[in-house]
Image 1 (cartoon, rainbow, N blue to C red):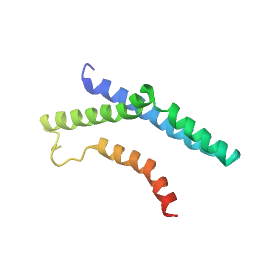
Image 2: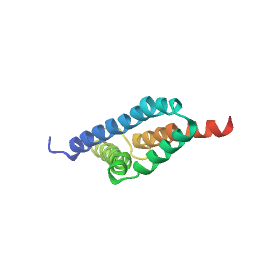
Image 3: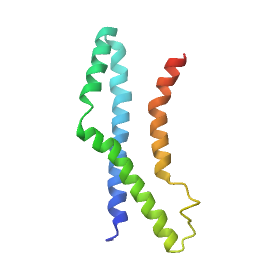
Image 4: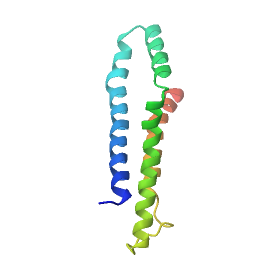
Length: 117
């Protein structure tokens, strides 16, 4: 129970839950409320959200979670490889990269679809 993997796993799970909450709230409340106001007010509201979201707490959760998840995955893969668990650090892709890729796809895909359409 004193292994750092337990703490890393707990912090990564809480951080992932917070990031999921950010995405949930934004997609279910903010994006559904914007079409209900005139376009000029919607633009002003989005610009205000973009200014307010740039703070240390948001960055700590949004980007810190990736670092903790990367550290937990790295530690787990290498500790299993040392223990002879059949995992080779060279052959195994790091799951934290999949999380990062998925997160970036969720953010960038709608923007690219809007530009092309």
